[in-house]
Length: 341
Ligand SMILES: [Zn+2]
Ligand SMILES: [Zn+2]
Image (cartoon, rainbow, N blue to C red):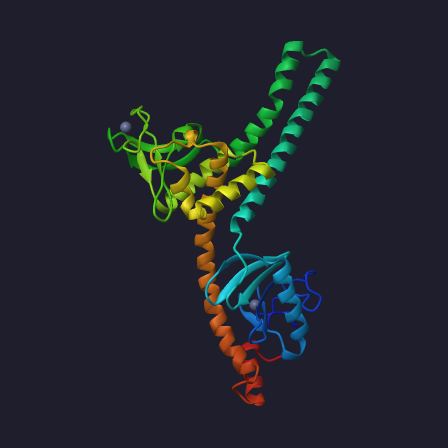
């Protein structure tokens, strides 16, 4: 095990998850070939852990992955996992089931917790304000009542505005029916947003304020990443207060029954339906699914990069572990990569 990256010298941060590899938050290993690397967060290069200090750590790592690892994404050659504070690249085919949408469920539950704290803060703030002015005789009963009743809403509403603003989308589009120029879409009109199922990902139709018959023949249609981004923003805005454990579970089941996040919109949203017409559970499932789509795209890019890294590092590891090259050469190679010590 190394304290520092062999290539750039950046120190590896300590981790408490592994006893036999207590440095580095990113590691890669290949259980079949018995390789173990610490990955540098600064230069992204992999440092091959010397053979003699590898075996216990490998065993420990495989156990951690089996017991607590959550698969984020995988290709035929590498899998990216998370276990506690560690990000783990496992070489070889992953047997674990992807459970990516549970990750986002956690986000929704955390949001709910934050929202609760905000509302409580609002209520406490109002109580303090009322008590203060009451004592000095500066407030009527009606004013006190108004503040008391609206305080949590004002605080949470303000927090939501700070986080999102008013506008979910800006651009230049034309209504497909009346030709009116549409430059923005506001969150408050979200109920009229139409979701159009697609092969790969869903599109969205932003309504036109002139054409009152909301259908997928009017308004501006967004597709691809722009649609995904807009839908993610609108749904996050809508679910600012998060979702309960029970609803997240229900939503995850809905996604499973539909056959995965990609299939969800085609299964639960009938063509031409507005967001306002989708049920509560469906909307939570939709937020999880659109986020998952986005995440999947990012992960597949990262994974392609990791796979390229692995090919290069494995080539070096094969040489360094001495399966191809006599020992003196290994040393000179190590020096060439790491620089003189
Ligand atoms: Zn480095
Ligand atoms: Zn129009």
